[in-house]
Length: 453
Image (cartoon, rainbow, N blue to C red; front, side, top):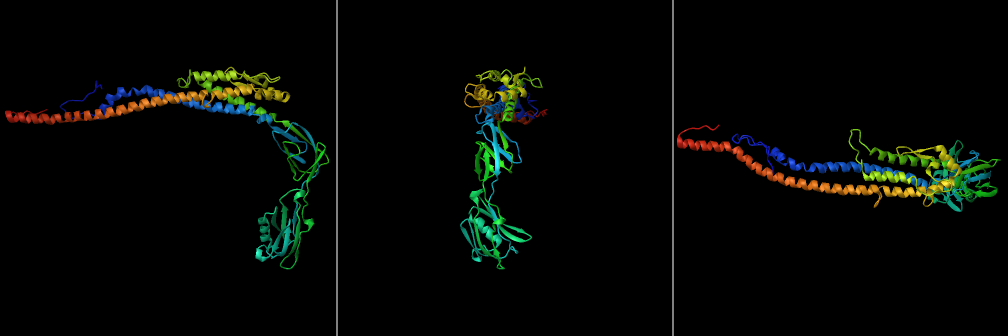
């Protein structure tokens, strides 16, 4: 270990020297061995950050493409319209719906059966007798704690017999309301009451105070059907609509392919693709400070760029659709894409089946590009980004091991140097005292007093 250039001061000063700084100076050249290792670690971590960002954006691109290549994705979606939304409201159109037009006439709306008792002037009046609802009989008395309007209502609800009970109060008194839990004719209530209040007044359920349970009746494309609910789910496969009112004029329901959502999905794909290309373009030069970007010159970057650009021009044609330009997608000079919405809409409206095949058929553009993206991203074990990250991780592990080993060696060396230099320092600091002792011995023999400077 070298000590060239170290200054210990005057040997006779008794001041010694700074052991810690001396050890640091001695080890400086050996510590410098770690500098290139740390610089390489910093560069690798900067690459890791870019790889992570690229992986995330490639994943987003893959997801946006999947929306177009998935058989249950946007190409299967349907949308619908009603010619009279005051009479019939279209609730949903699923992927199983078939595009087309339907004529629906409504002759009767569905009703849920309900009934209400005659009024009891005092809400907390005690009741007595029996009440039978849908063949379930309640003995109304204090023994069963169901002899007021509120407690009887609670007992009916607790019995779970397919009805809902509540107490309705107005200026004329309180009534027990019963509503069937089943809509349509099948839920028609059967109520038999033999009840009296505290004043011995009869409490009945007159038919005029409720609603009759009835099914909706309608025609769909000339076919008569019934529905227990005004929400009709099975008349047209994949279509759910709500009956709102009667009408002498049939309602026209139009089911179409959801080209709006397809257009949005294609636009999202173009944006996601441009984000990845933007990531790559950023790495092909220097940053704002003039320093090379982390992946400048990286073969991984070139692989990504070549594979992405090439994937835009692969895949088999589907009918009249042979390339992405027919979908309104064109490439700019910097490798990014531009979408012409009018061209895309024209293709969707005139050749939807061919556009679908271009993205979803085996060997199509969509399927081929999906495979390319899977080979480029962070997917184990063969994704390009994944492999690059694994290679960096291995190099970082080796560098960290070298740095750790060097630190261990330097720490041991530092301990040894410190011990040796502390001993030397003690000797230097003791020299003046030893010189004085020698002077005193000399004086005792010679009688000559020599002062040590």
